[in-house]
Amino acid sequence: MTPATPVKFDFEAELWIWEARRADSWTFVRLPAEASEEIRDLAAGPRRGFGSLRVRVTIGDSSWRTSIFPGGGGAYVLPVKRAVRKAEDLDAGDTAAVTVELLDL
Image 1 (cartoon, rainbow, N blue to C red):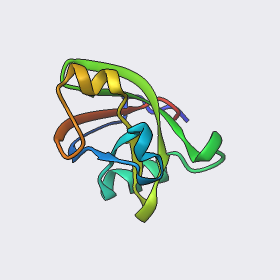
Image 2 (image 1 turned 45 degrees about the vertical axis):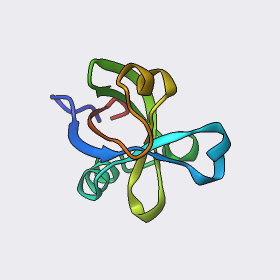
Image 3 (image 1 turned 135 degrees about the horizontal axis):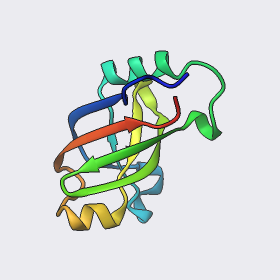
Image 4 (image 1 turned 135 degrees about the vertical axis):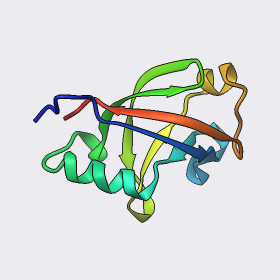
């Protein structure tokens, strides 16, 4: 089902490094609980690998396509690639304003 208008979520979140891949500096933000719950409701049914959903993301002047993944505590997590962190002068522990638009509905 494709909604008539894009489904977007705007939020602020702290960047954090995935402990299991600390040496690789895999950096993520966690989507808010309410947004994650709404996304689960909208995207019910079979999903791609690891339960991922394709999204378009904007942080500052940077926009890109990626996927969000179910994470601990029921929240989705969003990887923030190194090029974006560098362009937006962000590092783990910083808070970023994030817009996530669902593409898989």
